[in-house]
Amino acid sequence: QVQLVESGGGSVQAGGSLRLSCTASRYTYGRRSMGWFRQAPRKEREGVAVITTDGRTFYADSVKGRFTISQDNDKNTLYLQMNSLKPEDTGMYYCASGYPPPNYDYPLSATYFTNWGQGTQVTVSS
Image (cartoon, rainbow, N blue to C red; front, side, top):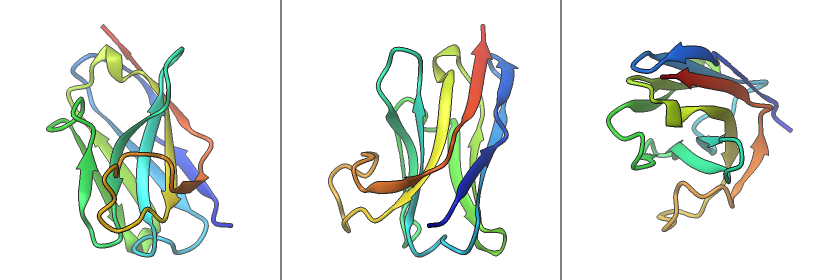
């Protein structure tokens, strides 16, 4: 199974930026959908951003216009650029890969994402 390793988390003040990275142990990008998910304390895990095998991107309404998901196939790395961070963005961020059905109605759902990293913590202070 491909291992996914996240990095780039940290503590930042509101309005700041972070870039998360997710490196795969071997080539996977372009063959699977990739996504970023997060879980805040006492809250359920939620989908933040997903990129499909054909390059379509989907974002949670709460991060649209602030976050950007991208991938570098040569480096086997997925990124999440996070700008204008807010305290409500605080949480553990996970990278995941999977095979959601084409044109799935819930592209940010974790249902079809079966391979997960260990997560990286993001803390945004006000």
